[in-house]
Image 1 (tube, helix red, strand yellow):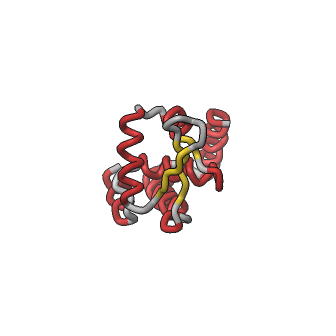
Image 2 (image 1 turned 90 degrees about the vertical axis):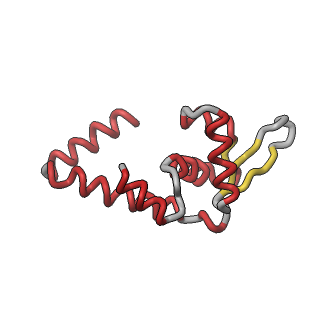
Image 3 (image 1 turned 90 degrees about the horizontal axis):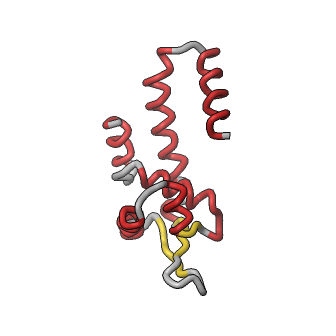
Length: 122
C-alpha cells in the first residue's frame, strides 16, 4: 500500500479514497452524484466525506452543485482537470496488483480469481 500511495501522490491524489470518489462521480455522468448517495456507496461517515470533497474541490478535481428542492443536498461533478484522471489512477493500481500477485499464480489461476471476484461483486 505505501507504494500505491506514493504513486497516487505523484498524480495529485493524496488519499486512495479520492480515487473512489472520482470513480463514482465519473460513473454518474453529467448529472453528477449526490453526496448522500456517495456516502452510502462508500460507507464513509458524512464528516469524513465532506472533508475529502472540500479538499478535492480546493485541488480543482470536483465541483459541487446545489440540488434544487433538496435542502442542503449537493451533487458532485468532475472538473476538466479531473477528466481522465480516474483512468490514470487505475493504471497505478493495475501495475501494483500485477506486480504483487502476478508472479504467484498461473494464468489459469488468475482467470479463476477474476471469476470468483465477479461472482462476489456481480
